[in-house]
Length: 485
Image (cartoon, rainbow, N blue to C red; front, side):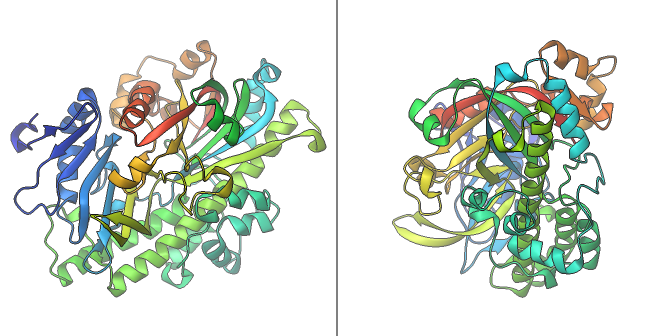
């Protein structure tokens, strides 16, 4: 398959893996996971060419990787993964993205789907009232002081738990315990601080959502039992990140990295990949600020979960003492982390960029929570608001092939403007209601931009990674009601 005028050579390795061979100034080959339709879409939307561009990063190891939910992004494709060596590698903010630590949290309740029949609309309205949504949304909780924001930056989810939002047990099933080390609030600008002080506990806009759902099908009964999931159980998915705080951090460091790349003589095919050597002051500053934004995102999801928990309980009229809800897992999509991986027979300390990709560590890995360690890390893969979402598990093969990474969602096939244009004359909320899904959003434009057809079918995306042995299916979740950002 060739990429039009670019004529990027692409070799099919098997049913689910494709490779762009190394040529020219590429430092490593490109590796893409997908079926023919997914790869064709990658050719058309420029994300395949972005995979090639990422392969030019100094110190990149193994492959420039792209998951089956890939689509074009800033610098890196969304769905892109790249690992760089400490000694000669770089950090590229484009490999993390603007919404630092955008991620997903899954909460399981002891409520059965039969108990919410006829009440879904009321629950969705309660969630909408409790968790502010939309661009610039604020005011879910009191405006935090600068001192408290510094604590959020360094403590992450633990700050929220100490304020009464959730339980200590939540930290045990949150990636990295809900706190990335190395955060330094002094590396964050005053503008970012001001944007972050009143947005804790807010959903934001775009593809962020709260999704009330139910376990629709179980593929692995033993794993589902360990995760505490069973058919007919009511669940809640929370998808959001670091809001304006993380956006500001990214925006400012992207500008700094353009200058840094020039200063260090780094030649790249795309200015959006601007980066700095990992041993440079610029890299240290970015990683410290990025960790602050990552921790802000974990605190944000922790607060939202507590607000949503109360809203659902009150909408159902369940006394607090009888209400049971448990965090299954909380994970990150957009982040760069120091990790140790076995590559070509030796352990390497690598900076792993995951942009629109999920960590998927295999069974026995010490960073997988104790209760799940025999299974592998839980992987939460939301779809569009009209079809399904999945809970999967990381595998040992992912550790060998993808630096313990897998897909993060369905992946867009339409731009927002294209999706909105195609929705003219339609009423997306009514269409979903006829399918039994109640949806609320700040405005109609959001629903048009986020309509199900704007995304790939998540069933296909998940099946690619399951069949490739990178992440294996455990359960499928069916949406009942959705609040969109």
